[in-house]
Image (cartoon, rainbow, N blue to C red; front, side, top):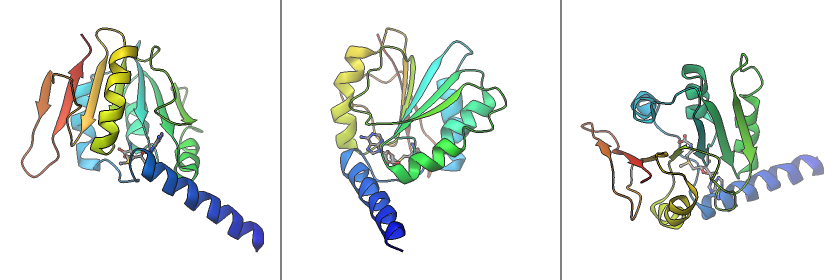
Length: 169
Ligand SMILES: C[S@@+](CC[C@H](N)C(=O)[O-])C[C@H]1O[C@@H](n2cnc3c(N)ncnc32)[C@H](O)[C@@H]1O
């Protein structure tokens, strides 16, 4: 019994810590997955990362529908385990979920990024992405714009969240 309580507490604390770090878990709307897929337009040689991938619903969708190298990073243990389980049967697709803090990894290696976080987190990550992404990299942000980046396109639909596409200059 004690072990179950200890594990539950650990999962709760880790989810609360992640919520405080960049955003609580609120999934991207299923209806918006295709809009994001179109904006990202991932090719087989692209290396994509979803920042705070939650249960990896979007990353899983992208891995099924593209040949790109798909990655997710997640700080909440509970969500990480869910997401990780989705990478088991990937039918040979390049799909990985990493445990970690999105503010602490480096992005030199990636050329496509998606995020759905709180506006304060966009503020915090904006400069880092500017420094570390190579020219031509795509960044897609959900709901809120990325401070100090000029959008290439804003995908708007009535009654739905705005989605912003940026290309690193
Ligand atoms: C708004 S949810 C979005 C989930 C998923 N990307 C989606 O769109 O369905 C934000 C996620 O970011 C995770 N998160 C928060 N801070 C983080 C951090 N510093 N590093 C990695 N993940 C983080 C949360 O645990 C949560 O799952």
